[in-house]
Image 1 (tube, rainbow, N blue to C red):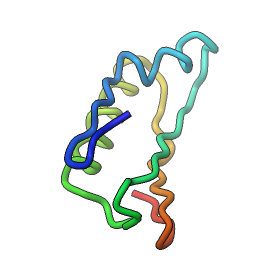
Image 2 (cartoon, rainbow, N blue to C red):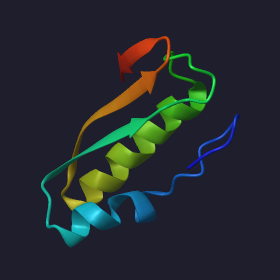
Image 3 (cartoon, helix red, strand yellow):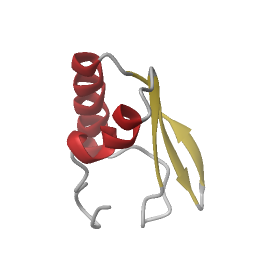
Image 4 (spheres, one colour):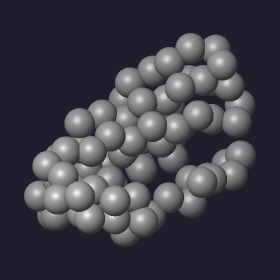
Length: 75
């Protein structure tokens, strides 16, 4: 869940389902409200933060997908 300018995603909430299922890997996927698949600075920061949190937990981030009206992009 986010806003036009920021991600309100916290690793604790995002990783909870993966932890509950004893997952080894996880993906991040979101659709930007702008419809532009280009990663924002916030997207890049979120990807790094989630990868670091996953590494600490032993759950590897496989990819961050941006699915948008104007195309798709992988970070």
